[in-house]
Image (cartoon, rainbow, N blue to C red; front, side, top):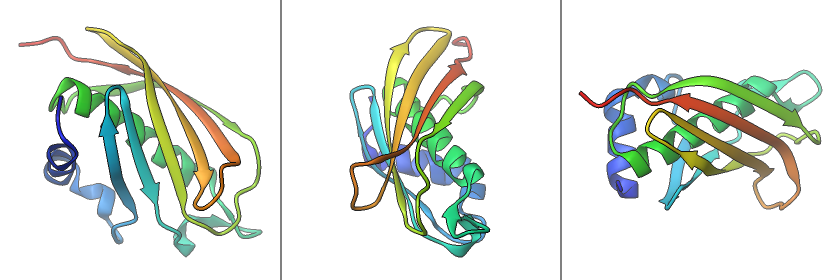
Length: 139
């Protein structure tokens, strides 16, 4: 298993583009089959009406699940998203968000997980996401 620092270093090295336009996504914790990712509030994540956009929440969920996979499998840069599904449950105001990822299955070929997204300072769910990732065969 990779530590938080090792996982962050891998993301910084392999995916610096996630910080294009500023550092708004922060990996805060990794654990056994889990990861927590925070997304800062920024006007670029808002849609008309002052709510956080769906694409911003989708990015948060995808990053959180990918970080959980990395932390538990090791540096597998070619693990790819094969499916993401989102249920937007309530309208988040202009606020930062937290994604709590949990892997439900971590196999040799597939990883399946879910992410619970809440607004910072609240326990009310704003989004529930599930995802499946293909894991490349060992070389």
